[in-house]
Amino acid sequence: MKVIIALSALVSTAMAAVTAIPTFTLQAVAPNQPFDGMTLSLNGPLTGLNNSGTPLQFYATGADNYFTWSLHGYPIGIIDTPAVLVGDNALKFAFLSNPEQVSEKYGSRMMMDGWTFNMGRPSVKIAPAPGKFLGYNFEQRWYAFPGEQEGQWNVMWWDGSCCVTANGFPLKLKLIQTDARISS
Image (cartoon, rainbow, N blue to C red; front, side, top):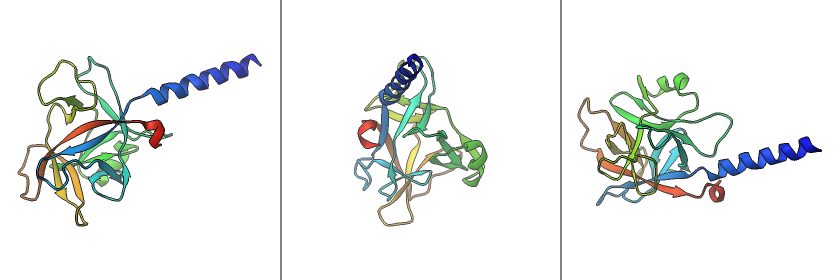
């Protein structure tokens, strides 16, 4: 009986810890652009704006004294789905399970675990919080490119090695906290 009570308490504590993890989504900030104010969604593992996929939700792991963070898809499942940038020069923003094994399908390069959050200016505290902007290694090189369907946009991160085509529009990605217990 004591074992069952102890096990029940352990499960309750674990569930409370999982539901206490702050989860976020991302909102496009691009004044005068058709996608301004849209939230990111997932079409398979890739992120986009105004597509028919599921709303993007993630949580971050790290600490206030870390200079970079890791992002992970939410809800939490058996297989972790970390956020990655994959591709060649314009990198796709994706949430891939087993990224080391499947990223080559999307391009020759993969970057992860370099996520940063800021208010548009350098800050000592880079922890994720509502209203901050998502960057990678302190860079905010996000662009939206027209998708396959009218009104859809692919969100990509530019590595700075080449030029951005005329149909790419710069944007910022603002963190919006979600109540994961309600939406999952």
